[in-house]
Amino acid sequence: VKVFRTSGHAYLVCPRLLELDERHGVHRSRWPKLAPGRHPWDDPEHEAFLEDSEGHLAADFYWWPGHLPLVEAEWPVCDCGRRLVHADLDDPHDRRHLAEVEET
Amino acid sequence: MPNDAPDWVRVFMAQLVGRASSFTPLGDVTSPAESADSATETITYSPGVIGEIAAMASFKAAAGSVIARVGSVGPVTVGTASSVSPTFGQATTSGHLLVCVVGSGSVAPTTGQAGWSQVVVQTGTGGFVAIWIKPNCGNGETAPTFTAVGGTAMMIAQLVEFSGVATASPTDQSAVSAGAGTSVTVTNPAVDVAYGDLVILGTRWALNTGSGATFSQVFNNGGSPVHAGDTTQTLGGSTRAQSFTYSIIPAVVAAQPLGVAGWAYDAVGVSEPATGTNASVVLAASPGKAYTAAAIQLDSGSSTAAVQQPRGQLVDGSPVIWTCLPGTPAAAGNYTGRGGAGYAYKGTAGNSMTLRTAGIAAGGVTSCALGAYLR
Image 1 (spheres, one colour):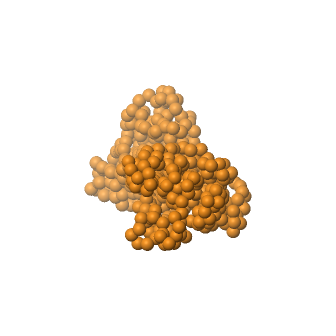
Image 2: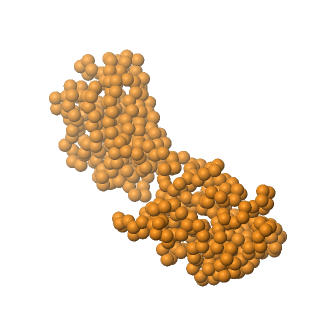
Image 3: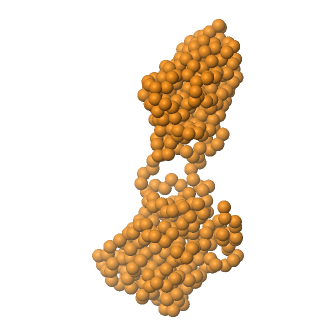
């Protein structure tokens, strides 16, 4: 059985978001820094406002050593029916994060 | 959470998990320290103590049961140097656990009564002290007679009946101790996680000649001592005291006010996507362990319209196990928050846990955060 051998944080998004604006594929932690005193939901002035007009889904997926990759039934699915895809941060499918262990 | 996450996210999550700047790595190391059952008995006796021995044993509750003492304890019974016949406090009831703390001098106590077995015995200054039991007893049992053929000091015994104890193999752990002072401590060998256990303590003391020893006991793991009985006796120039105490470890050791986290969560996550996108935190499954969502935070709002806010959903693997309907803010620019600490939504062992929003309106913004235990 495959398990994670690392700690990781993946950013998964509905593929429709990437069609609307590629910047939806960038996790907020890597957006341009917010100016002090600004409301966190006010996007930086020098960037065009990033908005999802259709209400799709993004997911922050966290794992730790010994944990299991998501099975198909657990993988996040957007209300629009699309299966989320890895867009940023750690790739949960990357073999560097995974180890094969014997099932006990 | 990434190290370069916005400050407000760090502050928010720090508040959520009650920690200032860092988050606890996953694992059980942050849980309250469990400890092995332990008991200390102290004697008050002015003529002085020569030495003492102690035996302790713990017993498991039957599935779904709570252990309780039945009726009255039997009388502390003083026998001869070779025999003692304690009696029950009342006729026994089938399925119960019968316990006898029995002591003797120079020869270990034993009995031929059917169904009785010795759990633990200690020998040293003062002779022998042992804990004998009969699990899953019958109605109207005949009390056992204990013998110590060739013994040189008086035998003492006391019987107590308990309900709710496992009827097969009830013994959890046992331990012994000895000393030469006015207190003795005995500790089980392994860390105890089975709250609800019955812990029996039997001691026997060799004393300078006199009478009227008194005893006090302290148990750990939240157990209150119940002193079943004791006696101080002199026979042939030897003064011996014997004491029987038990404690039933509470199933809940400490209650905390709602909203107070006892210890840092094993896993935390936060999600705050762009305007108009539903947020989701997904915590990966761990084999054999179940998440319990303890801190749930959902924030949403809209700067453009007073619209219905997205609902929150807690997902155990794939089924939704909890839904939150936050309502509609009174006006554009208002934000709603739902959640806090003190929840206890338990998932299934081996499942991931997800907190997400659904049904966000155009122009709405939302974020969610989840703190969970993994045990």
